[in-house]
Image 1 (cartoon, each protein chain N blue to C red):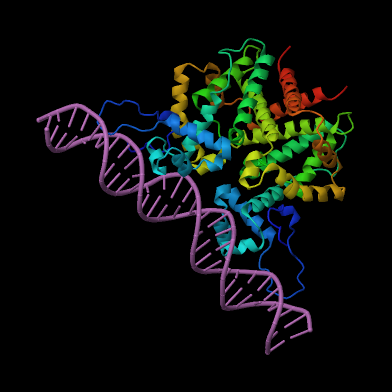
Image 2 (spheres, rainbow over the protein chains, first blue to last red):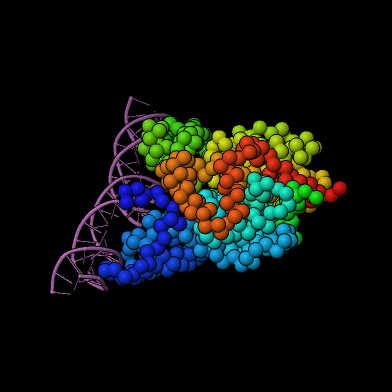
Length: 243
Length: 243
DNA sequence: TCCATTTTGGGTACGCCGTACTCGAAACGG
DNA sequence: CCGTTTCGAGTACGGCGTACCCAAAATGGA
């Protein structure tokens, strides 16, 4: 086993055969990932350090490395774990628009439950089983309309990018705000506030000005906002479908 | 000045009045940002550490803090600096579709020149002057069609999200690959390759299978791919415009 | 001219991080 | 019961951002 470095975590399944000699494992990947997700949910991804996860499990940081090769792999496992929360039918129903709408809302729900997931989803795609299941569902929802797979992948990518970005905006840079150590209220008032005010007073950005003023008293609740953009994206997809 | 912490970098302009006592500044924000951008272009954002930037300037790490409060602020400055590279007319021409197409291609060009920018753009928005200029341009391109500012902002967000994500895919997770210490070829072959093959052989993801097979020999060059998705997004915007 | 004042560049050091390496303890097969 | 194997845990290393400190440099006022 000389070249086992740099191998995808999905190729390194957890050892479970417990028939030989040696001490019994006290933990499991699932337990570690679960703890890490809980910490990330509560305090942001950057709080889920190896030391803190281990502390929460009552063990030492290095013990985790018996189960997970690198922290990056742990993050991949975390991502795929929360993607398993999506509730989708085993196969698309045939109504592509309602299928993709359902998937979009489910992805949004995961993002709202796990804000750290949103920032991560825009990075390298996770090739874990749950992520692949969702991707497969969306791809096959657009199958059978005469599009070639390249175009289907492009449309699905467009949709999931919209969903991810919209949720990102919706959770309001929560993770960033937490990283800088201030809550949303303080951030808006102390950090953005004065600068925004100066920018607005300058008169150089009238449209931005209007958008900020509206944003203070949004006349659309977040979900309707999400729905509006989603429908526009789906309109764009419909424009790409023949007929 | 007790409460000067946590103040936006845009509210802390560089000191330039050089009429009092004290040693002359040997550097400037612009020089530091320029070096940082060069390093990030060459070796990725995570290589642009305070120590390495300082080394490249022939000074010590802590000296940079005379000009820039925190590394996060430096990153904001870097972002806004590259956004200044966009070449846009001072005002939209009135043809919203060609205006937004132009802006999209310009943003894509910046992303291709500075791959690290792409990963960052999906985080908290930079409120620097160059970023605001671009945002203002896109917003006002959709002004005058009877949409309220909320809807305009949503459409513009949708478009810039698409552009960012598409470029992200186009540069192929370069930054991630670099961070894990392997080039793209090694990554595809050693890391993704075997796992992908196993997934494909399982037969569980036929659509994903097809998309991978096509991706190996893409029949659309990257720019056409970008254009295809862009046109779909613009179609979606057109569907939101009255008339 | 000289000195008090101010601001610089740079060094040292602290507390984090991921993780390589090591080793005694525990659990089995023979 | 003992050799083999795998565990939990400790120690340590290099790197990060950055708080703090200080000597050198540049001024304006005496």
